[in-house]
Length: 108
Image 1: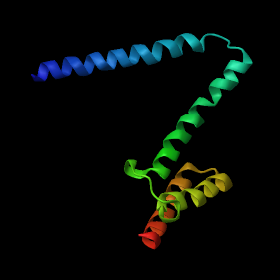
Image 2: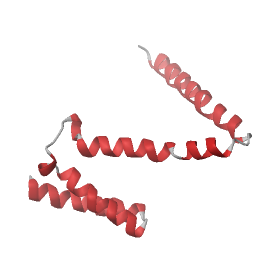
Image 3: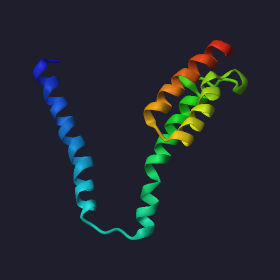
Image 4: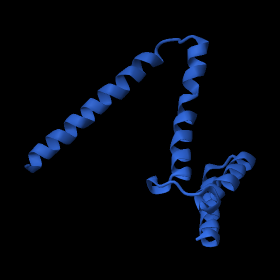
């Protein structure tokens, strides 16, 4: 594989990614979707984020941990409460890291 070939593949993948993502978004943004569809689409980001977070909390590194010895699970609960109370992404991130470090030290 030459360097030129790698760059052609990277540029081709970027163009394909752009076409598959931007063009539908650009076209749909010009349409007025029915309210039920807009409401349904509004749940996609939170659903995807929840699936990612829950998967990593319950199966860190792809391994199931027993709930009572899972520092990720113990840290997730107070972290969620911090976000619920203050609605700060930065504050929640810092709190989550600190909670995880504490629970890992306690359970580790």
